[in-house]
Image (cartoon, rainbow, N blue to C red):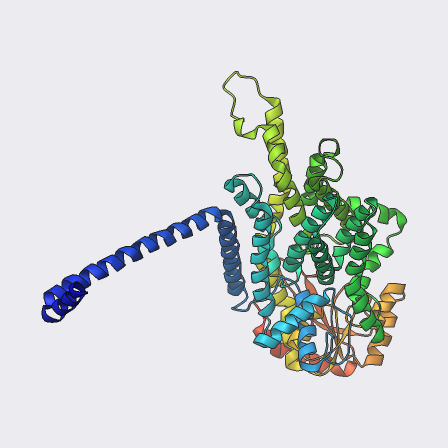
Length: 576
């Protein structure tokens, strides 16, 4: 005690002594802090090393998104425009739901025009939080694509493989599924990929076990509901899984999966029917008209044709078939179950679904295929002994087996690389296509035809950017047109009758037939390098003769704002 008191007195009397004491205390604190900082730094470094594959994959994803965004802004005069018109249908529906409590592509009536009700509700909820802006789908997709990469990584990280292998697989997932390209569609496909991966892994795990936990079963049912609500194609996953549960005589799981997969669409159908529309969305029904009119022979070979134009799915199918080993592992081994689900879902989608249209329809299958193959490919690659492949010395005999194995790997990767390379060019180009055609149509209608009735082909931008009464020639947003397309009674005369009944003044249509002769065309816009629009040229038609002069004048006034790359032609251009 006396010693402590003496020290305190010395501090008060002798400043130098106080400085020495303070220096010792401060020095000790500094040393302790330095040790802690080193420990923290080591922890951070270890975390970075351990999770380096996902850090690299996310960095590549974000860098790709930034580069593509800058390219889009540059070619579109500073406007961020999505790569397909469909997202603007979702935006229009979500805005009308928020502002007018109307679930419809226009604010004037209900329309069953959405193939993803859950995506509409998510966008609508985001509008409540941040306000109505067309940047919401982009922000959601950036977040969801990042979550998709992390989800894929979590499903891989327990494999007994090198970090280089996981990095390669993650980069394959990012680019071969065209994940950056999907982000700029603004659609629900990134969310669908996440939910499909979870459904795929959960169902495979439960099927491979003799008894599953209640937690896994409940989680599977929740995921089944949401994966179905986000995309109707999820039925192609649910059906094989339910069938496999039936094979195991697991009646409760089979029935529960079917029920949860059908529940969101049953609920949507009840609302739709109560509003006078069909049970399923017109966007699904109308797009299936061509398939129904093909005839049995063409329908039966439809899947083969789809597979021929989808080599990326073909190689994934071949790989999963090759990796399926019932005798070695047993029928209900998890890997075999995963392969069976993927093969079945892929064949169902090829036969009954759609392929392409900016890589989006089959994106979930590519993701599932990459996951299934990457989980099982380690043993397959070791059998090929690829690391020991070397260029033979002059005069040495070729190791045909090893070269054959290397050739298989190259053959497997090539179609996926091709798919990954295409989106790099197509994404900015498609955005420019939409900006120069559908987006300009929407701006034109907003400026000159607000509140008036217009007949359209593509209805997304037109209804989001302007406030019109829209009649949809493709039947997605107009019930009676959709019904006529469904029963095969649509004709130019029927279109004229519908236009007269609804008071259509002007029409902006693709010149693809079914246009009444008495409607006078006064102008055309043609875009260059078209990769996404249904047709490069849209026609402006005066449906009512009294509207001809006004339509010509409006096109003349709007012309200076068009891009120089848009080719203008027709009657109105004589006045430019």
